Image (cartoon, rainbow, N blue to C red; front, top):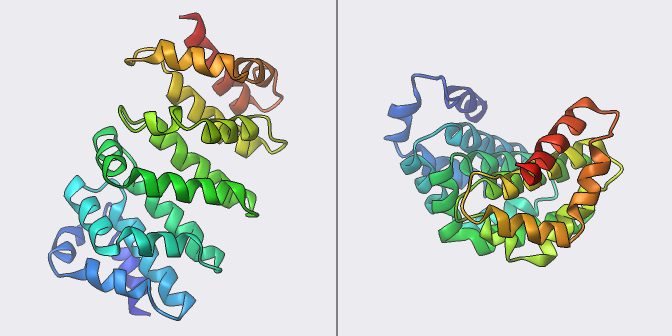
Length: 229
């Protein structure tokens, strides 16, 4: 299938990426995501996900502009789990590196936060929820974007819930999010640390430092160190 070949061509290391961008392929791929065929929707969004990986800001902006937030959110509620996972992958790739995170969230932050909320509130697999929490951790890494989380008490309660979840993958993703929110060397970190302490985050982080999962305990210790520095 031609669209799956295109997915491979668009991987970050592929030398074909630049000429493909100039050929109007973004429009083609965005139109594929509207197909009645789940396989074509998957291939369209998968290719866009690969295109967004470590891409320049102009490429990311063009993908968001061409796809449109309405279609992005349709894909985030797609009944096909493959489509949903690839769309989350696209969002995660779009929201990487701070200037890109801040730029995209300043334009589309409200809608993206609504989509994240919806996924975290509804019945989904561990994999889907983990990807969504990783997107939230990327947002938390933005300079201005993190305020969209800090000023949203409902979202903070969700992060706290997953921090204390029974699944280690979800706990780890939530810990990454908290760590990015309270990182010491950044403006306003003291206020953010104080707010999360008041909400009971520190008690949960302290418990996680004792976790039998080494990745989780290490990440929790790193987060706790922000309070001690």
